[in-house]
Length: 414
Image 1 (cartoon, rainbow, N blue to C red):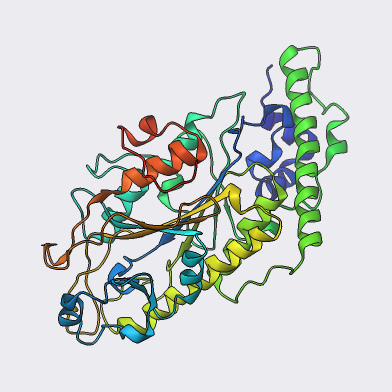
Image 2 (cartoon, one colour):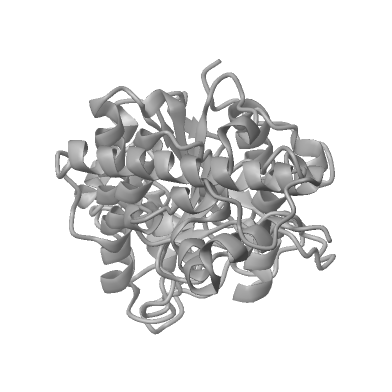
């Protein structure tokens, strides 16, 4: 009779212990060090930040010098004197002072006019296109980040580790065919309080160790338990050593980014993180009415949380390893809708933040008069942004992941 790895776990630990261990320690935490996935020599990390609901890019990066902006937004127009000026034409929202400082320091690039060919103004369908990198709506079963994971996965070489950090259901972008990408709420989810290594030192009853399969699997389980304990101890030590040294504001996004920073610092092999702002609360960025209050609060949370994350990584010179990328399923209409809000649009800016971005503006601001169904037209395919972070940052070939060749943007330092 042959035994699987799970058979050994059941025999050695019992079903209840197995379930407990499985929930506390994701699959990648249990993998032997000898089977660790090969890393790119740059050892870079990507953090993808989803702005759920359709962010109004026009009141985020504001074209204050364009008279059309004032004409179309009689109640939503932001006073020029309150903006954080980028140049003589554009300015950040008044509540984005921290983003303005990152921009001035050269840690932030603004990719303008990013959108989806064949745009869809339904939330679910639009998000699905961004998550799958498939504007043709071919009903892919995997997300673009999930396909990155799958392309490095094999039975002997585990997947490139990716995780979702946050309290909401994991976004589809991380769906993979072969690997399971975990969701975490905090680093405590990865601290295995009791990894029963001794349980593997004795051969479980009923297991015939005379077979090669049995010996191999038993060795695997012993090493897995040891490695889980080692990684868990590394995370726990890091948490104790860093404590509350970083100054994060009391926002949900800041909490999630603090968790990301802790895991980067623990160096347990995670290279792709996904976090979310706006999911599950008051429609997020979907501000059809009374936009000013909610949108202001969300942009303030975005700005302050990302800035705290940057400053945290700067403390021990880790910022050059990390690139944060934002996206939203679509922008908003140029003209306000009569309810002090805006409706679903097309193009919006994407922010890139990190120690190796070139900083500044990438691409022109879209026209406020040449529109697509009342919204800003896109001039930069979102898959060019994806190609940039895959080819030039993570070191993974983007063409098989995206289903075609897309020219990366010149936004990163060599």
